[in-house]
Length: 435
Ligand SMILES: NC(=O)c1ccc[n+]([C@@H]2O[C@H](COP(=O)([O-])OP(=O)(O)OC[C@H]3O[C@@H](n4cnc5c(N)ncnc54)[C@H](O)[C@@H]3O)[C@@H](O)[C@H]2O)c1
Image 1 (cartoon, rainbow, N blue to C red):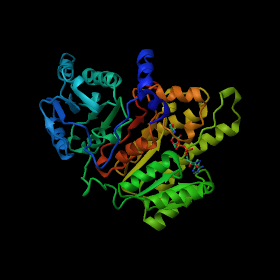
Image 2: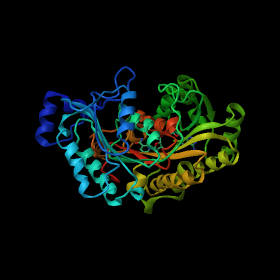
Image 3: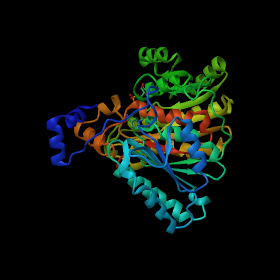
Image 4: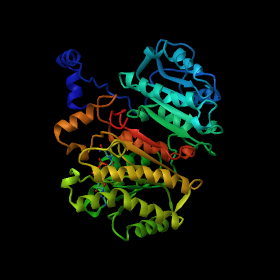
């Protein structure tokens, strides 16, 4: 809990927050192996082609599917068969009577058909406005998402539902996810889905990168933790903690792509998962920005990634069914004062998803997270008032934690996420910026 949250929960705080209509952040329920994924059973509704597959997944996660309860952990509606604007009323009829019975940190998931493949493109597109608004109305840590499942992808939904119907997606809300057809193999052990996989994480010595290393290591991967030599000590500590190894280099160095390829092919016979997390900010408004600031940010956040990806694919170092995962930012979607360089680089990361996901389709999936306000050293350096605004201006009224970004990346990295390709998912508590 941050300081404001503790205050808001105190007797006096509760009074002040209520009187002034201040944000009231609810402590988010995050993944813990010791507790069920959601705090209550799941109500599944709708009449499309996904009702049965969804019911089966919900049961396999260990949650009860019920037709009536006092309180629900999740509400899932299959809208994939809605083929006219008139039938959008089915959303209202399903959700209106039960939405107030959703437990704290409950989940709303609407499933649809990608509009361009649907009988009624209009009705399917309309689902987005519904889910985003529900996300904003849910208090107490609830989230709402829309998942477009392409025809033929009905068997590829499990990893996504496991992510969305659990505390792993605690800080993800108001998102639209697309799942395409793919041959998906369930892992032998859902608790260690990355067993036998090798993951490279750049910028792994601290902050979000260290959390990514932790979560991928927890899920069974051998993590190659990369950072600049100056961070060597912290990097070793992370690598030791996750049973991984280290690679010290500056990703902008001209020989960095070659060294990365050599390291991964010689020591690990290639790589399965690449997470481009290393990033920097060098903020100034454009008129005051010197060229060094521009160049450094583009070099670290974007150009080096492109060079590393090109080198890895050219050398065939990415093993079959690979995963390339970028770390963008809501600044790359919304833009931000003082961040023309950073927002350019982070919008470019979304460009990488668009172009590379097509170029390497069948060999690897390419997706990115776009974090909002995450509590790290990077955001601790932001001036107080801007920091407080960033922290509160979202549906959760609080900042996210590095683990929230890491869990989203682990979902992309999952072997059963082969149908999740070309997505950019914001981990921002449904921030008002770029919404
Ligand atoms: N913290 C947030 O709220 C937030 C929001 C949106 C996006 N992001 C993105 O998430 C990523 C991680 O952010 P963070 O907050 O953990 O930052 P951080 O500064 O704590 O960590 C970044 C890491 O990258 C490493 N790095 C920087 N330049 C490098 C280089 N040339 N070669 C190798 N390693 C290098 C640093 O040494 C550091 O360990 C960044 O890409 C950042 O832009 C963060």
